[in-house]
Length: 275
Image (tube, rainbow, N blue to C red):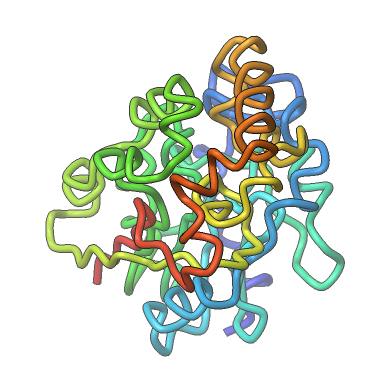
């Protein structure tokens, strides 16, 4: 099937309209990627070892829908992919080898029923305005597996970052939906896979820096994690001052130095797969 041609001919025109609440650049969730999305792709690259989990879960699916696709992380390059992304800032950062993304939102996918072999959503469900509606839409347009890469809010405190910026972790815990909510939205029968995070993880979500604390001192690294945009700027300033001090005087390494050589960290990262 030529999925691109098929999609263009089978869009649900009644569904292809903006949500009532969108930011200036089109961002439809709680985070304004017109502000925090600048330079996002410099810090958030697809991590190959995480990508392996996704590729395996996609099975033999040839046509894939990527919802909340952002700059294109984890999109398979050996299959036919249609990407959906409401933020103009994020769509503009998609590399040339990936297809342009359609301006649409998860809650109103402009596609016919059962059009895709599989669908995926990575690091996005916590930003949707209506989680249940978005998951129902993914299930509606998908014949086979639906994949959600996200974080378990009950496991976020396992990372040392909670000791330095508990406000940020608290924000994340409130935003990330529980595994049970995602399972319910996808029909109940799901596999929830813990995804180990490698030491040199190039996808710079917060836990990716578990053994490289110096990297998260970079303002761009924090900007690429939306939770920081929901706390007062004084939290970031305090965090940077405290962590810089503890790195300089050795306190961080006394407490957590073993993480610098730990190959993987089993934190909150999860892949939810509905068959």
